[in-house]
Image (cartoon, rainbow, N blue to C red; front, side, top):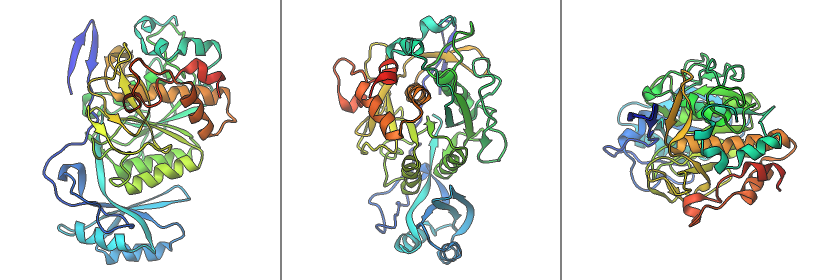
Length: 411
């Protein structure tokens, strides 16, 4: 992470990539004993396995099956429809335990290592916020696209609830690790990531303070899944998702990802977590996810379960750092994005972490104005009305830049 001065603002190129080091155990799923290849040892939590129970499986039988495979249950997570277990195994037992559990199709649907990822108007800053006219946001405000009545779940480092451009619109939320409050940003990696992400999506507008944002009347429900640490895990992201579902949130921003080839869009690398994504979509939600800052091609498929966003610059060119490839749905500004930080000061930052909440905020605008729409309809509208950049390439830009004004009246 680097911070440097830029005309009085700080610029951050925040990488949301998984650390790569020595490789050891492979992944396993119930559909096959072992997924081909190995993954870096630094990419997962040692001696921890994440297991998705088969729907309808007996709880006591699942617990016994986990014990029989040398697993000790650390955490049980459920949204009332699906249940996942985080288990710990003794040293040297990872591979054997995963093989045993993957063969137990009666009780378990998916098994994986516990992967981890790195955190990655009249307003005075408005003239610097090229991202807003690029998405046709000012016109959308005239159409009453303000996000009122919509809650955006932000799974991140927490959000400072007293930040000037967010004050009064940040729920207490939760720290998913400690069960404390989520409306405190604990500065994971030395940068108050969750607060900046939230101001990109929902900063108060026309308040003569700092910047502006598309869904400036939406409410942020923050979930801290880092607890001040450098990494989060699949288990904590899944538990965060379950919490937001319990709060009846149907729009989530996840500006965190693992690096290529283990991004969240890779269902083989994250079978348990991905089952949570599928369930959230099937229950009516949309989850927006930053593509990552690896600058590499992602071969994972595009699905409606994860709305993956790349980053472009002010000239509508793909950012040099942006991950790109098959899973992309949309793109938005991610280079020198201007908003405000945890201390209510101007900040300029770069990363797909910030193109993601801009895109998510347009969905909030659409749902606020047309709350009767299904998640599939909102996604279809965003796709049909998106702006295709010059030199359009679907693997760089997905379907294009969300067009806020057109989306409010489109179909």
